[in-house]
Image (cartoon, rainbow, N blue to C red; front, side, top):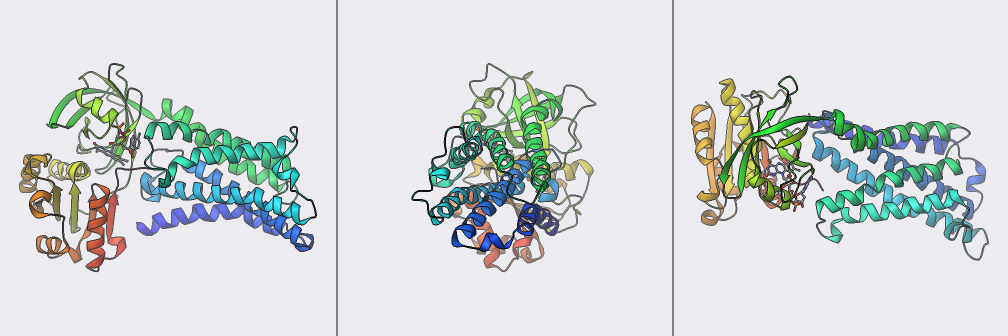
Length: 440
Ligand SMILES: Cc1cc2nc3c(=O)[nH]c(=O)nc-3n(C[C@H](O)[C@H](O)[C@H](O)COP(=O)(O)OP(=O)(O)OC[C@H]3O[C@@H](n4cnc5c(N)ncnc54)[C@H](O)[C@@H]3O)c2cc1C
């Protein structure tokens, strides 16, 4: 399965090389005649490759349910989207610099036409505007500027739409990245992918991609965690999903102090055999805090399912080690509830890491599930009493861990710590699967 995901990601990168191949095929001897012409050729090459990466990054942002599966889930898909975006930015920043150097090397005092184009030079200005917009919408994604406010980040990121359009206008007007009419053909195909994906995301997915549910129960699991039960408005239109999937939920209650109309990702903790959905939400910010006091009857929209944490059609006898931290228990809870609903035996050892007994979510239900499901084992790890999870603890608790695929879901430091221990114990990277509750 890992190989498939790598193959899918590799194909995206290979697609980015298509315009490059046509570009290279169109090169002639005069492109290498002087320093100036080589710089000019490199300038056009970085432009062509940068635009290809930008349009593919846009294409991957579509968020069509199911499309993330071959990539190993939405978080992995968006990792590729981020890499494509960062690559596009670097190449497109080099593009005008190389062209300016080419023009300087050609004998001009100053590369005036590139750096200070006349006002009516729409072709050059559209390129500059696209680049400036890219710098603005990509800046908050770099951790250098600190953790961005998610909703603000999203609003700024929407500038990607005009940036893509301007970059295409620039390319079509100059029309000098590939021989003859290939320019129009190749870029139109890439544009269709990128612009089509953005249009789906911003316009059509809201109508066609969302299901209507209403909240039928709100149950406090801890003082900062609620479990919502969602009932489909139309019984024939309910979500089909697997344990470990997540959805985007948009509450539509204007009386919420925050988050009305905002979509947020949450893992489903119900068994896929239930028609009702269950979602456990921890107060981690303004919207998730407001939802703690949401009223039954509130309408919500649900989009998904996304993610591929557990293997699709995984065999229950496959030995697995699960490590959960805090609210990261949700995908494991869904899987255990599913095993129980099916009356299926399992071969899992769940280590649930929490600060203390009081913070162990669903502790009683987890104990009941571990008892009810043949082959399910449960160990709690209490940070305040035992300190951080150590490699010795993992080995003592689960002596046969070298035979088990490991699934980790919890705060980033816990994810990393457990991965480091497992790698130190000789477990190969491909046997370790993680789910992150962070998408940026
Ligand atoms: C795949 C996935 C599964 C998740 N499952 C659960 C779950 O089962 N239970 C649970 O309590 N939490 C879950 N979360 C986390 C949950 O999405 C955030 O806590 C929530 O969106 C925070 O929103 P806020 O406005 O309250 O906080 P904010 O202060 O706005 O955000 C806190 C952090 O949450 C992230 N975040 C905020 N809004 C979004 C958004 N719309 N999309 C993506 N990330 C966002 C950002 O990284 C941000 O730094 C999951 C997150 C992801 C990515």
